[in-house]
Image (cartoon, rainbow, N blue to C red; front, side):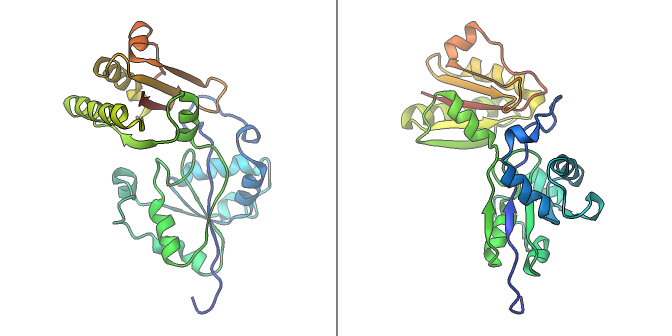
Length: 255
């Protein structure tokens, strides 16, 4: 780095309304301090440049950007990172942080919520640490924690299991394994699904889980249509209405 002080890597949360029919005003769900930092950044790493620009356009309406949108330096994570994830350490993200090594502050954003949590980005954070770049997480919505808090399930011991298998038999086996872990250890299990598969996943959960196991489903978090339903699986069987197939949801099971 030739003695040059590196910039910082800011982890910039995004609102949870990505892909939803309606948007929540940023001023209602994002701290002003977070948006002000986002507005002054000129170098970004993101999942998708188009959605990153759309978010920055919303930021600009509240806090003018340091550079026009067309002048922002926005790099996308590779496609294979989106398909396979980057949490295992196999992807080297150091080249994406060249601007930070040259003294520029950078931002990392995902399409919704906190980058590197249930979304790509951990490889970038790891690379920043390896390069001696300070990592600064900013305050904003994290769907997993909001859903856990709203579930009434144990918040002292919990785990995120990511996406469950799409194959029906593998999914049932995974559900049973997560339920066994939750009931034996008291560790609440959280997982997500692509919205258009919300219905099939909920059906599999209601059919597979034991009647006394508690199941919580939170959808549309931070939106005006946000809903959390938390009851026993027996209760779900009596009233099976769940999230629609367009709205992101977080599923939690526990005791």
